[in-house]
Length: 389
Picture (cartoon, rainbow, N blue to C red):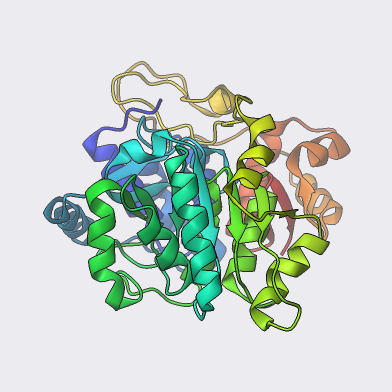
C-alpha cells in the first residue's frame, strides 16, 4: 500500500485539482516525473510546450480544502492508500484523491449499485426499495448517487446497514439540496464520497464522472427505471467497461421509463426480478482475484522506491530518502515522433500493441507519448489505450 506523507498528500491534491489534469494525465505526470511534487514544478514548462494553461491552484486554496475536510470530519485519501476502496482501485482511471465522510467499514462488504430515473414511478420506487432492503439484509452495501427518485429510495431502504452515496459536486454540496438531511443520515452508518473540490456545486459534466465511481465501487449495477438517454445508462455502460455485472429490471413497453432497462436486457444485461437473482448471478464471481494493476510510482516518504513494479524503470536511483526529482525517460530519435504519429489514428490502440508494432521498448515510448499528450496531439483512453487527437 502507498504511504503518503502529509506533504505528498497535499501535492497530490494540488496536482489533481489542476484544471486540465484528469486522472489519466495525473497518472502520466506522476509516473513521468517520479512524484506529484516534481510534476508540479514541471507544469510551467509543460504548459508552455503544450500551449495550453496548466496552472495548479494556490497552496492557500489547498490548505483551505484541508481545513474544510477537518471541519466536516472528512478524510482525503490518495489512490493506493490502505483505506482507498479496493474495487475503485481496479478501474482504468481511478480518482487520484477522494474525500469521504462516514463509516469506511461499510465498504468491507460487497457493494451493489442501484440507479434509475429521477422521475420514478411509484412502482419503480417500491422495486428499488425492495432490492436495496433485501440485498442489504443479505450483507451487501448499496451504492447510489443521492439523486431524486430511485437513488433516494435505495439509500433510504439500506440506511440501517450502511449505504454509500457518491456526489457529483463537493462533499459539502449535496445535490439536490433537499437531500442534505438524507446525506447526514447516511454518514451515521454509511459513507459519502466525492472526488470533486469542497465548495464545488455540481455541473453537468460532473455527473458522468460520479457515475463511473458508482460503478467502480460496485460488483454490479442494477438499473430499475431509465429513459433511453439518461445518466443511469451511462452508469451501466461504465459498469460494463469496468467488468462489472449489469442487471436490469424489465418494465412495461408502454412506459418510457422502462425503455432503458428493456434495451439493456436486449443487449445482454441480466434480467432480474428480485435480490435472489442478483446474488445468484454474482455467486460465480465470488472469490475471484482482483486485478488491482499498479498505476502510480510515487515514492514512500522514507524509501525512495517505486510503489509498483510496472513503473520501477522510470524512477531515478537515489537513496536520499526524499521524493525523487523529475527524470526523463530514455529519448527516442527525432524521426520516431513522425513514425509514432503516423501509426496512431482516431481509433484507440493499446500501448503494448503500439510498442510491438513500432518495435521499441515501453520506457522509450512512454516519454514520447507523454510529450505528444502535452502538445495536444494524443488522447489517452481507458484500458491503457491512446489515439491521435
